Amino acid sequence: TRELDLAVIAGDGIGPEVVAEGLKVLDAVLAGSDVTVRTTPYELGARRWHETGETLTDADLEAIGQHEAILLGAIGDPGVPSGVLERGLLLKLRFAFDHYVNLRPSKLYPGVPTPLGNPGEIDFVVVREGTEGPYVGNGGAIRVGTPAEVANEVSVNTAYGVERVVRDAFARAQARPRKHLTLVHKHNVLVHAGHLWRRTVEAVAQEFPEVEVAYAHVDAATIYLVNDPARFDVIVTDNLFGDILTDLAAAVTGGIGLAASGNINPTGAYPSMFEPVHGSAPDIAGQQKADPTATVLSVALMLHHLGLDAEATRIEDAVAADIAERAGSSAPRTTSQVGDALAARVAR
Ligand code: IPM
Ligand code: MN
Image 1 (tube, protein in one colour):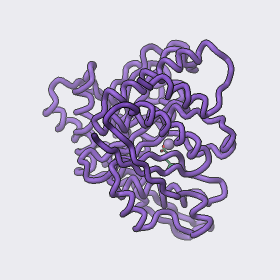
Image 2 (cartoon, helix red, strand yellow; image 1 turned 90 degrees about the horizontal axis):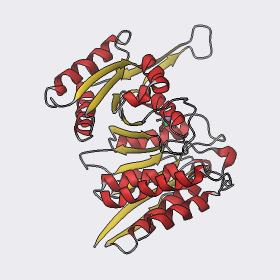
Image 3 (cartoon, protein in one colour; image 1 turned 90 degrees about the vertical axis):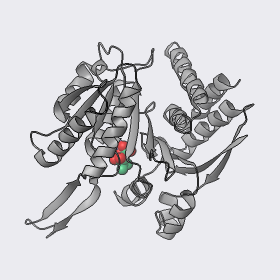
Image 4 (cartoon, protein in one colour; image 1 turned 45 degrees about the vertical axis):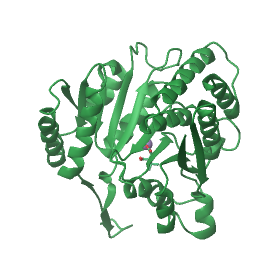
């Protein structure tokens, strides 16, 4: 028997509600198998910050780092100044655990409403760099609040950091039927970083002769995501472009209620972290209105990452079936009803 040892950070807003359903479906898919789950909750987020002023201490990091993987609900609260929890908790986890592959798949499930008139077959994955770019916080401001204010946010791109995420994206493209990789950047303007990314893709491409490579500037990529999203298979891009593109990708494939993500350290040196792309949605928190499907699909990504592909696929198939069925009915379901339905489908 194998025991999965998970750290659970339910977080703020709808986080606890959706995480409860993710764990429910995880238990159901593993029931009767020789894999068991042990979960350790970590009380992090707005409440902890209000009570103690702490976001994520060294002791928290040390403890969370001992687990095999992390399941996270959502972080963020209107009562906390913007950036405090985002930088001090969520990004701190991604950086401390060197989550350089931020994996965000987009698939248009049959029956899902999309704003696109002619969506075609949408099934791509964005490999968003997770530890560099403008997210590193390398910047500063002077003369703040005066007419002479200067505010800088510096995008950090290292050869090491770009190469490792590009190589991971190529490997993922190689493993997919279409074997196609698109670099998204803006090398006509961001010439320093852009050319590093372009040269790196050209160099790593030599190791993957079967993978077909394309390039799109990020502005054009937003048009393609609306006009012709089926062209994409694997997209590799920097941290900020990836953040923006994956919200758009979610919007054209049924909304952020379905968008899953993994913050992955492929070396296994640190636990990888799985979370829905959506935020804490304080306006609907505690009302059982949130769709837990994105969290459930994030659990599937976690199972893939942990080598439990059959169980992961059972969850994905259950979601596909559930979505197909929900297309035919108009009755809204509560968060836990969706979780119950998915749990019932994955049970052996
Ligand atoms: C996301 C979120 C985060 C990001 C925020 C909350 C820091 O938007 O996971 O996409 O920008 O990465
Ligand atoms: Mn985002």
